[in-house]
Length: 116
Length: 183
Image (cartoon, rainbow over all chains, first blue to last red; front, side, top):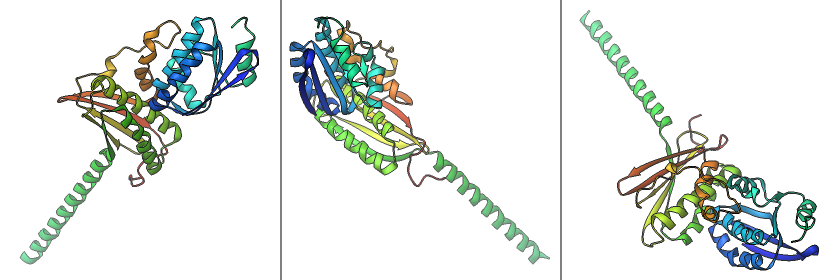
């Protein structure tokens, strides 16, 4: 499971995930996602290269999102493929973390709505 | 006269036998067409690390029977949810036990995965539909498996078996199936 971060303007952190967010993939990123959640308040999760996600993969995204949201921070999901997005929407995660397919709109959602 | 009568009787007997044979053959074919075609079986030990082999097995089935990518995704998702649930909760992460996953095709374009375990009776289909994930309810994070199972499978059937459970998960992929299915 690939995991990379990039610091963007406006205090935004982009997290790029690559691979299968199955049980093994979720275990591989859990700690790294928790570190991000503890330190960053505006996080874009790039799922363009994620081919699969199960409930443990959802957990690896939702738990850090709750931590960030509890501090009035923001998280958005960018670019999931059709099947991964169906999992996200079936779980209801999209009501908590907005899903974007337009990169600029995803950045705008993190940077233009008041303090992080 | 007697010779002719015997000949007529013998012809009639042959005819009856042929008709009977043809009828039986037709019945056997009908029966064969309606019988689920068993495709493969997969056996896992009760360790989560065993699950890494599941997608490889599903890949081989998808290649062999021309299963579409979206159906393969749904199969992987449902099997991950069910099998991990059995290992983590049914077997309480205790090693040394096994579960089997059978793949069969009841008719062209349909695939049924039967997961059998030896855990305590548990019918996931009796669980009420869970609400979606929300920012407030921490307890819901891990409870999405049943919701996903219902959302990505076409049929679900549960039955207890002596000393365990049997769950059948069905998927429809109209363009796929064993190549030797009668057309």
